[in-house]
Amino acid sequence: MVCWRYRGEGENNKRVSGTAQALRERISIAAHISSALSYVVLFGGLTTMAVATHLVVVSYSDLPYSDAWTEVSAAVQGEGLLSPRWLWEQHNEHRLVLPKLFLAADLRWFRCRQVFPLAGILVIQLAHLVLLGWSMRVFGGWRGTTWNTGVGMTALCFFCPSQWENFVWPFQTSFVLPGFFATLSFVGLLLCWTNLKQDHHKRAWFLVLSIAAALAAQFSLANGNLLWPLLVAASAVLGLGRWKVLAYTLSGAISTFFFFHGYVLSSDPGRLATSIASPARLCEFSLAYLGSAWTNKVVPAIIIGGCGLALGVILAWYLRKIEHSRALLLLITLSLLFCLGTAALTAFGRLHFGLEQAFASRYQTPALLFWGETGLLLLLAAGEKRRSLSFLLLLQLCVVLVFARGAYLARYPIRQARWHGFQLNAAGAALMTGVHDPSQFYYAAVDLRHIAEDVSYLRQRRLSVFAEPAYTQLGKPLLAGFRQSPGEDCIGAWQSVTPLQEGNGVRISGWAWDPEQRKAPSYIVVVRDGTIIGLGAIGDWRPTIRAANAGLKSSFVGFTAYARDASRGAPISIYAVLHGQPEQACYITTIQPSQWQ
Image 1 (cartoon, one colour):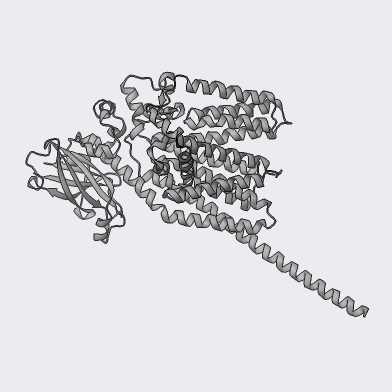
Image 2 (cartoon, rainbow, N blue to C red):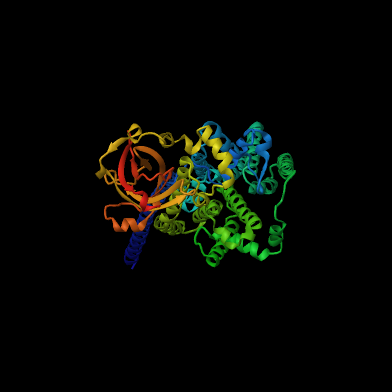
């Protein structure tokens, strides 16, 4: 009997040991899958960064757009672009000191080509990503799989093409700066808190960093004012000491006083009345603002925004007692509150435009930051759950599906951005050629008031579009500026000719393609009697042209060109300038005067 019992216990032990071994193997396989998925997510984030950079390049125009004319108008009026008076001057609801510095630097040192602020936007987003990635390692102790997933997910939110307006509009440094400086300010606060037992001078520098970043956010956009109550409350709750709490309080009070000194609240009192009298609509706008990152329909966006807000509250409450990543939890929570406050502040100022205004692409940047921080909360929760590996795998699979959906939908914002860039370039061609086309200026948001003085200022100083080599070709013989290319090097046609300025100028539309390089040419020149009399931009979206021509690999082949003094009875010829050095002019077609007169 004893021997039998001993044998049975041995078999049970073997069975238990085998079960444990199988469990360990399954866990090991799941860990390897999770690790592989983390690299997929990280690669997806890097790919999103590349797509955003591509979007900026293909939609680039060196013509100022909308509010970016601010610095040009100021220069025309004799303002010192670095003068405190102009930097401090209110712009709508904002004090845009730092964004104006970007515009002033672009005009003063970079010939108003828009490259400096556009590159700055990408660099700011990259710096924000690096700062958060560093915070994940230092405050959360994340390494390997979790860090890869967190960084990849955050990169998706920072560089998602749905916020295309903020990537192609130089003025939009004002939208990416506050989020970066908010995170930097919170990081300074948390470094001060986590180093309470360290050197006093070191903590003082962290405090200075936090306050300086909050000031920078405040004078980048109006939502920067939200940081001061968050910093004061957080410093008090964390027990940083009354002097540090007082430093935040005094800094916030003084800077807020100066922010609102001489402040004009609104040029239309009815706007404020509408917002104050509609608290329910304010909530709907705020939730739609947050949910717009997922859908462009009002009701689903409100529901998604509400679910995201509820999820953030539940996760923050669930994780409130964790110790090992408490600093990271606080950073995420403060960032979520900042995003929520930004949505509410935007609702208060823009509700009179209707709920559809919440879906503007420029508002995607704070909304996507909200969802990125919510994703980081989910990663924190994954580390706290008993079956954390299963939860992490599920989260990673969801993120991969989001990447897949984003890859499918990316063509729409890229198309919008390219169309926007083309319209600007076409307006620039009209300005360079000297043909007045109000309809084109409207699409490019070029205020007609700028045409007389501001454009003259740019032309005299060879700035913006007037700094382009193409502008110097006007009035010169075609063969003096370009090497003649064989006609078979390009294909295309003209489609319409519209007389402008009582017959003194014409607008020509058509399409062109370079079969050798398999892309659209660089730009268009219009020639009469061997002399260049007009210029054109290429890149309009023409899917019907692509469908009718099997050799075309892109739908962005349409052009709009302008020619001055084209009514002298002589035919005009259209040439496409091909990419490469030296530039080659390839003949497209000739238009007879009888075809437009």
